[in-house]
Amino acid sequence: MNNFLDLADFSPAGIRELVALAARLERKPEPMALSGKVLGLLFLNPSLRTLASFQSGMSRLGGSSFVISPGSSWKLEYQPGVPMTGEAAEHVREAIPVLASYADVLGVRSFAGGRDLEVDLGEPVFQAMHGLSPVPLINMESAVNHPCQALADWKTLDDLDIPDRGGRFVLSWANHPRALPLAVPAAAAHMAAMRGMDVTILRPPGFELPAPIMNRVTEAAAAAGGRVQETDDREAAMDGAHVLYAKSWGCTRDYGNPEADAALRSALDGWTVDSPWFEPADPACVFMHCLPVRREVVVTSEVLEGPRSRVVQQARNRMYAQMAVLYRLLLDAGD
Image (cartoon, rainbow, N blue to C red; front, top):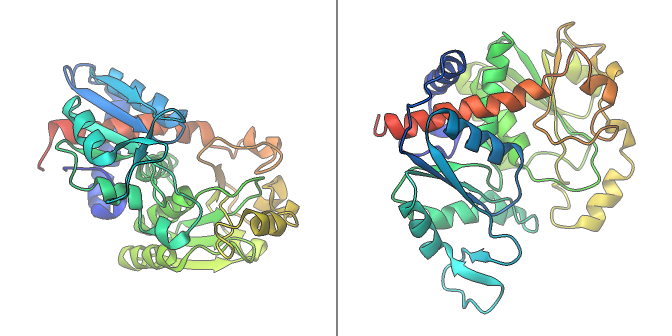
C-alpha cells in the first residue's frame, strides 16, 4: 500500500482488511506503533473532523503531525506553465516535495472549483500533484472523491451489521442553502456499490449525478453483485431501505451557475429528511450523514437526535479508519 487516494485502487477484500484493522485498533490500541513518524496535513480548504480525527489518530498511534492551511494569505498554484502574477505565492511542484520532505506521510485536501464540471471531474489539483511526493499521499477529500469518509462509512455499516448483498442503501439529496461539492455523494454511492449493496440515488430533477460518477458506481455494483438505480420517487426509493444517507450537492444541470442552482432548489423545501421518510423502510433503517449538517434544513432535529441517527458513530469511525490507513502506509509499505 503506497498511497490512499481512492477506494477503487483496492479490491473489496482489501478494503475489508483495512476495516478489520480499524476495528482491531479500536479494540486494542497500539500507542507506540508509529513512534517517531510524522504526518503532514495540507488543507487547501477548511476542515474540522478531518483535521481533528487525523491528528488524534496519529497521536494515538504514537506519532506526531503538523498542519499547513494556506488560506487567503498564501495560495498555491497547480496549473502548469502559468505566469504566477496573481495571488498564488508558490507552485505545488515546489510545495509538495518540500512538505513531503518534512513528513513520513502527507495528507492533502482540495475541494472542487465548482465552476466547470468537466474540469472538476478530472481532479486537476491531485493530478498536478501526481508523482511529486516521495512519501505516501492521502486524499483527505478532492473535487469528486472522499475515500477517508467512505472507508469510515464502510466500517460504520459493518459495525451496525448492515447486510452487504441484499442490503438497501439510499443516498438522498437533501436541501441546503448552497451548492455543495460532489465528493461525499460520489464516494458514498461508490462505497456502498463496492460493498455489494443495492444502491438507490434519490434526487429531484436537475440534481442527477454526472454520468462518469454513475458509471463508476454501476460498474462497482455489477462487480460486487449489487444493483444501482436513480429516481425522484421517495416512497419507492425508501421501500425496505436499510440505510438513508443524506447529503446535498449542487445542481449538475446548471453546474457553476449559482443563480440557476438557487432558483431550482428554492422550490425544494420538501427535501428535508423527516420521520415520515422512514415509513416504507426496513424497521431498523438508520440515518447517516457525514457532518456538518444544518438542522431543520437537511434533516430535522427529531431524526438527528432519534434512535435511527448514526452520525456521531460515523464521525468517530473517521479516526479509526484513518488510523488503519496510517498504520498500513507506514508499517506495511509496499505490501
